[in-house]
Image 1 (tube, rainbow, N blue to C red):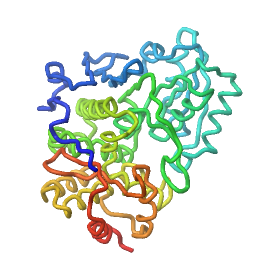
Image 2 (image 1 turned 60 degrees about the horizontal axis):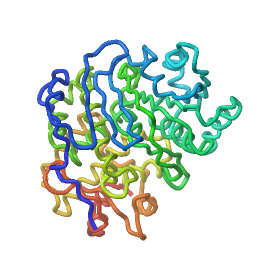
Image 3 (image 1 turned 90 degrees about the vertical axis):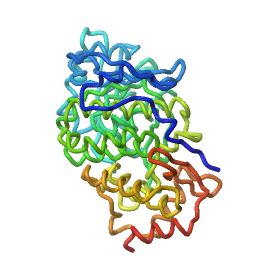
Length: 409
């Protein structure tokens, strides 16, 4: 059985030039997603994307300087307490700003917990520090957990919010490209297990996602590039126009042109929001957002959490998925070549780490979350650019050929 997402399903949003997102105001917005643009000013979003989930619908605010004022953030904190969860890297940079934004007016008591930084700390032992702090501070069910950081902090804070007293409010403030365009949107939360990435977790939606692009000014180049792997993914699986726009503007994006970065984040969020609205709990179409992730998660687990960034592993996994798609005759050679070229231009790795073996890949891919009834299921490209399938119906000998090509051992 195959779940397909064809190019015709991609959002009808035009990105025809490098100008500010004016064109977005006059085009038809896809079902289940609303995009609103506004002029850029202090604490005012340049754009807002809404994730339509009925009475759990929430906004994604995108713009520069959004942490400068607290009104936008505080309106999504319904109680009088908040727990900010961050890490040792982000805390010196932005914690005071967020605490001040929440505390302004004196109506919200703000508590803080600072976790160690890195994927290797995304586990139950470290997560307990969040629960310990919440209990020590006597936080009740009306409190709001605020995730300030990248994907690891967002995933852990969301899982803590889903679990603490069986569910408290939750807000995302992502500070990396990866978190802004992917992990902060859609409600996937959790921690890693030694046997597999994100194996323990829950679907739990935030009250809002607040993306202040000013925080990218302190993001290291390697982290910035890592996030672009997920941006490229949207173009490959459902938005050919966006892929072509990325090809055209890759150099300016790598120079972190403010207007273009906002547009890339907005377009990515629109794609993610539409898919989440259609399939919140990953019963079918949402799985297509995991292009390259089965290979990528195997790499992250196999070499040790934290050795590679998530986007770096996904980049290699995307190249491997494109190669397998090409070998199956499902895509034209030009699609595979353009995929490889664009990822390289974003300074992302495209080769498997030398320490990985075919046996390690096979073992770890077998326990992937998308496997069903003992069958490995992959997201593969199919048809013209922007089309993909989620399927177990592929020749396993062809998969072996792809592994043999990329794995040195």
